[in-house]
Amino acid sequence: MNLLFIGDIVGKGGRKALRALVPDIKRDYSCTFVIANGENSASGSGITDKCVQELSGYVDVITLGDHVWDQKNFENEIRSFSNIIRPANLNPAQPGKGFGVFKNPAAGEVAVISLMGKTFMKMPAFCPFLQVTKILEELPTYVKTIIVDFHAEATSEKITMARYLDGKVTAVLGTHTHVQTADAQVFPGGTAFMTDVGMVGGHESIIGRKISSVIHKFTTDLPTRLEVVETGKMRMDAVVISYDNKTGKATAIKPLSILTDI
Image (tube, rainbow, N blue to C red):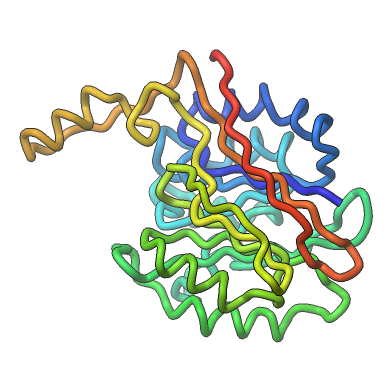
């Protein structure tokens, strides 16, 4: 079976690109389940209830990250959605859930876990290794397909998490840096891995932001509004995970990077 995992969606342009591309990708690669990281989908920072409703027409589960609470009132809105997964290792007093089990329309169930790294990340979080161990113990034994979105900055932390979970989950897929890495592989235990899946956003940009504003920030050290690229050529980065539904073992991982005009 195949599932599609989509990198960080950046702004309205990213949402439009997702709407334009996902139906064809699902058909071309026979994907029956879709997961996307939506933590930058609202104006480049955070997510809103309207974004969730829009994206839910094309994806089954939306994962989040360190920008989860950037948009006003989302701490209340998140309670209304069953398909939103925020990092599981945040303070437990925060609303939302860090993992969930979802029905795959084709067959079986898919568990989705969201974790956030600690290295170089500003948002406080508990140990992701201890947290994921606890979650795996809580999951029903009949759930074999388990996808982990590890939202982290340090490549070493992401690789360590994947090696730690090799043979225990179907895939560990990195998000957050918006740059697709060239290390997609299936580890010996049957866990697919990629350090960072990438993003859905402006192709002519700096991680989804206007080039001129980012250059100005780096060359002047002045506070600068980093505008999101919302029109023009958009790039959608994603991976297709092939797996055995009965064992949860991954058999292949295929990176995608597709351009479209918005």
